[in-house]
Length: 389
Image 1: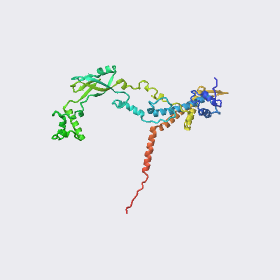
Image 2: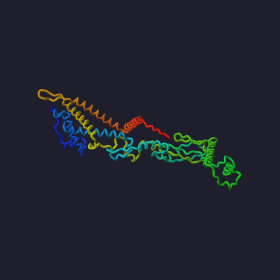
Image 3: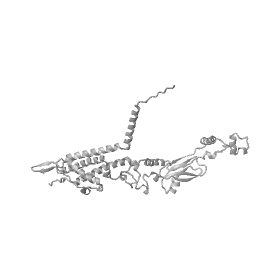
Image 4: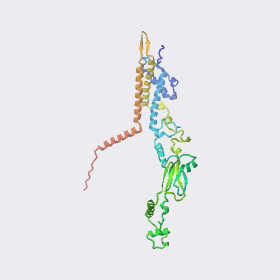
């Protein structure tokens, strides 16, 4: 069996762009420099030169690229989770990497539009107008047959409002209630000016509550002495109350069901927008913009990745022959340590990011303010005593 390849003891800056798999950071001079430096560091941590390290430069550079990618993934995933409600519906055309997300209520307000749409106070679905001819003595009408099939080519409609009301009291203000025909004279009489001539009472200044009381009297009279105006509508079949005594045109508002119930933006209007985490435009974080804390996390993850790779190789070559004996390698131990270290590092990073979320920061700030207020409350207050001579 052929012996495994061992690390040659040196690494070249020019080899980094050749041996990295995805070429994401090939133009980043700091990444190239850090890759070589981390290779020397990891090789020594794995036992070189006391022990052979069965890794080539290709393995080291690939592991370093993996570590930077993992760090970038965790940061971007946190940013997407933190800002998804704000970002959804924004354009996918600009890279969000390194940009501050301002926030705001835009998306929240947009979501509330669809609740207002149901009552005509928002949304993006037009309310249309329709009408049918009401026949004297006929109460029931099929709005689908009379309007939807004719004017909307059979499309299903949903009725939003029916204009079926009693004549407003304001238009019947001078209703004589069966008294003599001269309504204006009746009004003058009710105000106590019946002994004056008509010419002297042509212009009368009345208090506003007089108008309101008279209209309320008319409406109360209609409510108790006349039939109430109402309707019932089931499956777009409407029944009018009271039974129409005359012919008239009944108006209504409606929407097309397919438009109102659609869960997506139709046409090209909804394309090119952020819809889910898969198309949020976050690119990989440039290595030269990562601070020392992030770089240290990357080094630790890089070392764990090197251990994992080395453990896999030593697992294949479980023993190495030497003169008059053989050496047993520790592949399984290295791999188990590497997996545990990777999980610990990712959990540590996620925990740190969670502590930096908006909710966590606001809770910490509230707790700080509460504690500060408790301290201030314990500060003795001076008592000023004034003496009046």
